[in-house]
Image (cartoon, rainbow, N blue to C red):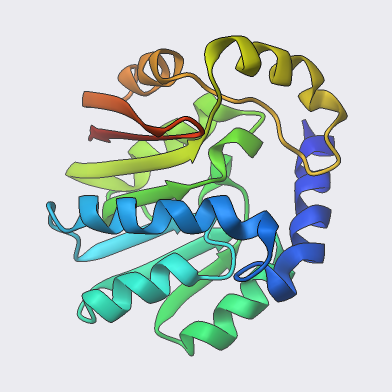
Length: 202
């Protein structure tokens, strides 16, 4: 399990300087407007972005809702360094692992996880942590990459060879079942052929 995390850390450390403009950050950028639109429909005074990368999504949250208190977590120190420069102290940023979030229980109204869940080898533990740090009634918003069923099964066979620490692509039904063990009101829908958005209530 640790090997996947190290591969992810190395890959994102290498990509940090130009992630916001390079092709390897393109998929993440397509998810930001979808997540922001969803956030506009729910209260979000305290927001945590797990796998925050360069902090771009948090920047957009603060541009739209400057009164929001934001925090972000990422494995990659280089990504966090970019985020610190970009956010200028407007968000609390921490290095760490999704399966052991360094935040108090019940602190957040919204937990966002964008384009990083497929890197998590201990997904159930991460979902448990998302649940723990959310206040009662808080919302998890999870957007990630996927593929059609046949292609997804084939990709998952070869993901252990990925040098970027990719672990598992989820289908909407599979992810909904996982989230449903922790959250209620779970919904998971395809955004397009390669993306989905899921949410659930604490």
